[in-house]
Length: 59
Image 1 (cartoon, rainbow, N blue to C red):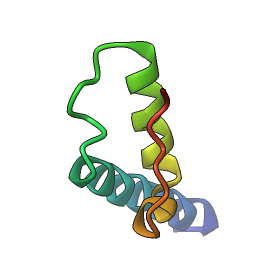
Image 2: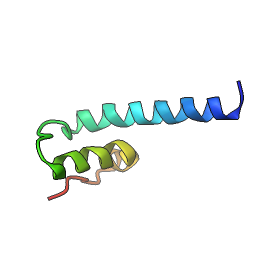
Image 3: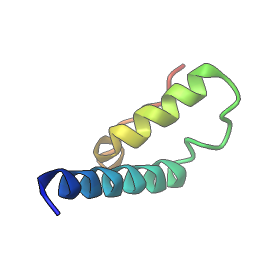
Image 4: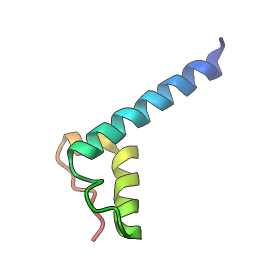
């Protein structure tokens, strides 16, 4: 088990935590169009910003 395996696990955990936090901030409530999908993807990737109150909903 090398460095690549460890970074893969860390990346996976980061994205899972992002999905959980994005869900708790209602980013998956209305994923019916491209803007909503992009908002959800941004929320998953940039989830630390959600914790400090940044709104990532694309309008």
